[in-house]
Length: 317
Image (cartoon, rainbow, N blue to C red; front, side, top):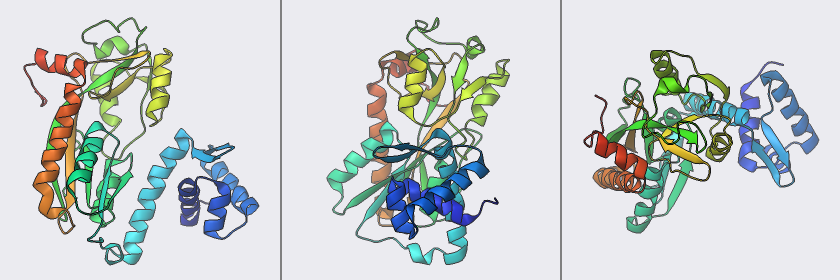
């Protein structure tokens, strides 16, 4: 079977509905017909897209991988067909997006206190997709990440401000031989299995592979996923190590450790539509995002200790 746009729409409809029966009703087909179509799509793609359970369906890691790309493809196609006029923002609603980080949650909590309009929140894994949603008028503001040397493109209709540049750390099992070290050399993880999240359209995980090559090895990556709870479970069980944001917290069975020499960095940004309802509050958005990020740092002893050792350096040397 040849994959078509309608198949991508079916995948997204199932994910949005959370169950095959609700998706079938929304699409206007019978549930058996939708189930058969999903099986054909999964056969074509070569993997299971959804886990079936008593309460409905949830995307598998492979399904989440495909959903990110399907939504991006459909967004681009819809742009070509309809143009942006059909997606003009409602001036009475603030639509906020982002990848789930302490900065996003802190920004949203502050906006709820000061905005005199309803707020809707939309999260995505891919920063490039979020930028596309901003430029196509589906979002009004968003928190984004990218990586030095792999910066997000400049979009004339979108304003963007750099909030912080921070190191990428590593998540280890608390029983890992290096868990007690103050910093971990990347080369010393050459014999470990890794769990690394899939491509985000901005340079991840390519930057991880590049740093590992510079350290003299190619990482062994049997696991690829975005679900943080599952990543922490694998790491806690001693089955893998994982790169992570510096603001990730220690937890049961896992510790966060800096990488010696800081071979990996990421950038936190806040962005807004220049013609959107939050354009005149761009400075406030930036200040709120910076406050939220600074607050998250203060709650992570491993990050504050790293900053103290490095003289407060927050940019690549």
